[in-house]
Image 1 (tube, rainbow, N blue to C red):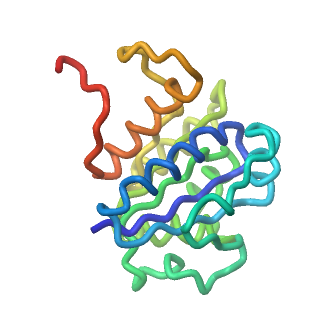
Image 2 (spheres, rainbow, N blue to C red):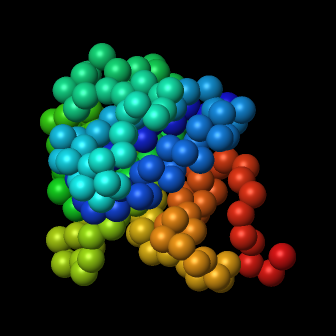
Length: 186
């Protein structure tokens, strides 16, 4: 059973976070715990991009503030085995790459990496500058997975949700969950 922390930062791409939370809720038989932490900027971007749709009233997952270092995933003893940062701002990625654990998101990422567990950073910003690329390299060398929010079109998606779901399904695959999705060659 998976124990997953979902971190949502203020980068554009709230649709990815919403679809991920929706799909995790539907896959409840595959996880023991899902916890969520959002930055204040993420809350504002969510409201802007998703037309004031509630981010915490729709889900039964516990939500934590950025400064709640008593959250179970702030320590390796909490045994969370997967962290998904979606969308992952370049500022958050840079702090993780630099080992700066100044809030719950960066602390949890540090814990996941030090425990050799699965960190998936869904970066959304483009274009990348050299600092971004080097930070992605550093996180990758530390054991993290950089999964750019780049959709695929093999399945011929026709709505924004279907396009975004191609990224979310890839993230769920990377996290090790068993999902039904388009598979190349099937």
